[in-house]
Amino acid sequence: MKSLPRYVPPAPTHVDDGDIPVPRDVSLPQCGNEYLDRRQIWQPLFIEPRPAEWFRPRPPADYLKPGGSITFMHMDTTYRPWPGRAVIEIHGVTREGYSVWVNVKQFLPNFFIRLNPNQNALQIKNELEQRLQRKFYKDAKYGGRAQYIERWERVDNVRSIMRYSTDNPFIYYQVFMNHPKHVAAAREFMVRGTGASHHDMRVEETFEANVLYDLRYMVDHGLHGCQWVTFRNIRIVPQGHPERVSRAQLEVIVDADDTLPLQGIYHNTRAEGACVVKSKIDQFF
Image 1 (tube, helix red, strand yellow):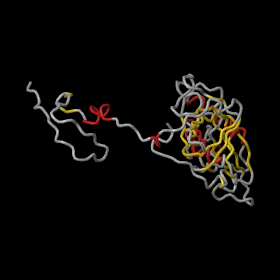
Image 2: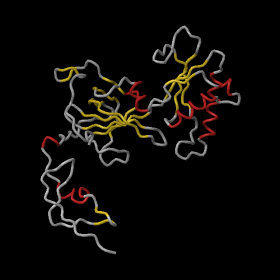
Image 3: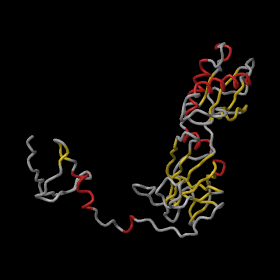
């Protein structure tokens, strides 16, 4: 097999689109019949000192107190769909410039359904639970729950629901599921009919069953992003702890009910909602 000719890259005149210059008269390693990307090979050799303003200040050791609170600017929301219980992730930056990662637990995915007065809500709930138990019986990741429907509550005055009116005869319920992966299955059963008599057991309509889990949390707790928020009763996750999942300077665990969006709070003589902290690429590290 003939070897590939030696590659001598031209002398770089500028760096464009993240490209990294390669020294002259250097042969690139080969992988099969293809050259490896120059950035992968020479990246470690061309790390220049970062400007001082890129570095975050180091938080003092006593900045957080167990059971206390933390206030920061909320930048982004994601979630981890872990098999046991999904966890909301809140990312942000404090006034001092410390990066924050908050793991929010105990938030149940939920959606709304509409029943007519002649339907038996308890019977529908029990039938739905049985169908979910059968569906996820052999699912190693999202099955094995004692119950898939955590709560089933009647709600009134839910004006956010499409076509809602206090004059109509329908009854509305909010259904809380054990895991986000169970919501779509529950909705499908309710639309098709959960029991043997599909026409009688079918719900009138479902609402907000396709809302993402992290967006559902933000809506339910009054978060809209790029705003100041306080989390109370925090549990600190120090560096090296087995529960730690981030490289943020500050990582904590809280319950969903301890979310407190701030409105009209003053911060450095400016309204908290109008004061924006400095941000950068790779914001949360």
